[in-house]
Image (cartoon, each protein chain N blue to C red):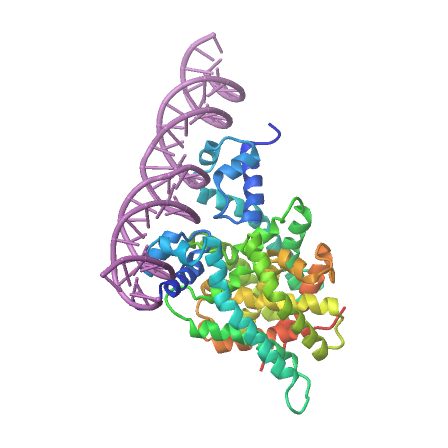
Length: 210
Length: 210
DNA sequence: CATTCAGTCAAACGTCCGTTTTAAGAATGG
DNA sequence: CCATTCTTAAAACGGACGTTTGACTGAATG
């Protein structure tokens, strides 16, 4: 066996979830793709629900950890210069973009799943995301209120959510954007996409109030 | 029978698709909720896929038609003043916001389905959205290039997609945003949400290049 | 009045689903 | 070495799925 059965299941589940969606992907499709026995899913994980959580946690925990690290580095950097809006946004966006570059492979990329999870139905998924995002969102909101002291906190809250929306939609609907682009832009140039997202969200965050 | 069977199916399907997702909603759940016979779905529509298309078309066609009307009104208004970025964004956002206000009812609103469809898997859905959006996107891109002559078209293309992302994420992930807000903002004040989205996207569209 | 026909209905079709069972094999530790 | 645990394997479980069938309705048509 090339790799561990558990990892093979996670890899195949991740890929098929990204391509076809979670509900439309059967355990049989996963185990066939992974070339493992069907029952091994319920042996290593306990249920399909638990597998879904494991798939998401494997990617999102490192991403959110990296987000917190990069933000801390900005806030505690030598010299004491306060972080700019662009720097905060890059700290938030880059870990996902990096994952997009790293896991680029057959068919729809893994980040499509990350971009889609915000809107996937199911209370189990929602509470999981809420638990993971609440700390990150609160920390970034604090940082933004330092970089943008003129924006009232409730408005800043909305604008942070909109910034999340820019990221989620860009990677979650990349296949649609690619179709609409008709070659006008190169959707595979992840560094350029990151630059564009940061410039847009920075302008949005700084937008005059009233 | 209170209303037509076909409409009862469409109403129930729309509601359940928004609440549970398309793939997770069975025809039996729809016909039970609509209080009609199971076979009537395959009689009035031909398949579940066709029902999904009908549900989306019923909402999206009027919205996109309204978008085109509002944009034309801006471009051809007496006096000949060119439309502002904010006016263009309002023409794009308001038809969806209006739908959110109009169809507010039990559980997750209908617009959640609209916000989610961009990231739903399935090539059938994707091609349908692409067909409906391409004309609207092209027209709004033209209008934006008039309002923002200094922004290169490829960058404007990205920023229009980001503006779509703001809308899609806000309505598609409203349940998550509400949970993160902890009462800091009122997510049910649709007019305020619209104002916030316009201000953010306008700032993003105008953001300095480089 | 006989006939047509769109619409509804209960029931069944075959298929696929997540999960469980039972047993055989590999790995591990005394 | 045997005994124990961990892992895989094939097969089956009951249930839910989308779809189809064939009979039945009631109003419209000639």
